[in-house]
Length: 451
Image (cartoon, rainbow, N blue to C red; front, side, top):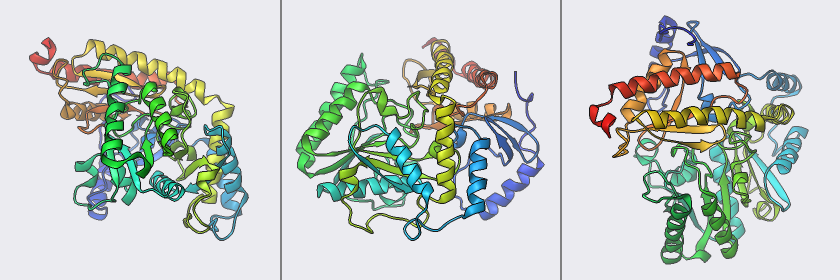
């Protein structure tokens, strides 16, 4: 059932490239397994030594339509023959306008909307905070525990994972506050409703006692956390949050950078709860592999910064706009919502089975095809087991499957495989992962097995 039995990786060319990487690339740039891609298509890639892999990482969620989708590649080639770059702030072009119009059509919101394009998700977050502060005249911003919003100054200030991303880079932006994210697992609560009530009560207490609602410009939340461990914000919590922000004139920002563009079985994860955020930050799979991001939201908010207050040299690059328009067209034509739901059901069933069968799988969770398993020491303590998760990922790599971890302790294994994946490849990749989890479970202590 494997691509190759016990892949001889890394091969000589990968080893040579790794030596060159270590000599030339800054130490702080993290990497996954020692794979150097030569070719990639759909959910498969081949390294420079000819080893074949299935890709369940998808560029950390940027490849919902798969590697090198032919429609996306052709759109980029066609645009490249016309021109590469003008800077939209200097010379405008149709692709930027067409993409803005398409995003207005897709993004939730029963009000008039406007769009600003950027290059990265972090840029979208930075501009969302600028717009919220400009519109409200307030300064305070609330983010959540476990949040990941990027690595630039404001985005990193909002990000919650200090040891890996923030240590040594302070001081950070002021007027940033942190609220608890409603996570049922390990919470001690019996239901999402109870968990939501407790988390929202703490949120409201913090705002009213430590900040004051009339000082809060924005609340930014991932409806389904990415780096934080694939925890979905419960519907009751999101609805209470929406109502609270509306009542107090606070801008609600939904960070859908990883969860957007059909990944969860809806175009955007907020659609599962029926709420509409005031601003949406988008990136990753919008470009089908090309770098592009967007801030989309209420026109009255988006128009508050004065002319020249928003911009960027490469924002909405013509090649990336062409790629994004082609990507969205593919998703609509080929019903990627149904693909995500079908793939998600298969992955959910496998993950839930492992959670019941193996003591090292503490939890299985997610929405649609954005799913994860949390690897623990044992079922009683739920102690995070980042070392076991790393062993599982390493064994999968050696058997032809690329994965990416998440969570504060690095013990969450996430599924972000392309939604274009063939079902036979999906099952084969899940077999590889299942075998690696079973092996980790066998290596676990007798205490874990009896817990």
